[in-house]
Image (cartoon, rainbow, N blue to C red; front, top):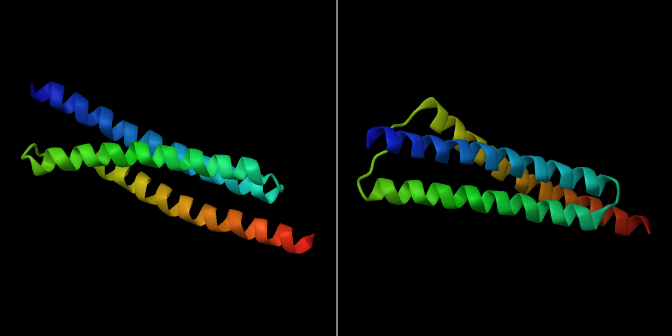
Length: 111
């Protein structure tokens, strides 16, 4: 039972890392697309980033629900690392949205 719980926690943690990395990558792709004037692609990439963040948020919510119900997870460096990935991805996504908007504004003013 303990090994099964450990495997489940490891899978959740790895999912957080993967979703965080994918969210950040998509946000970065949005900036690059906007830089080239490809605003439809930029918007799609921001939405893609948001989807990865929703998946990560759902995993976090599951972890928090279990914690609230008395199922305490062992806090490991890997778990801390996964949370760091998510927080950085959220920050990067927010900033990417602002940068895409700025590129759109500059494009409009240049026309």
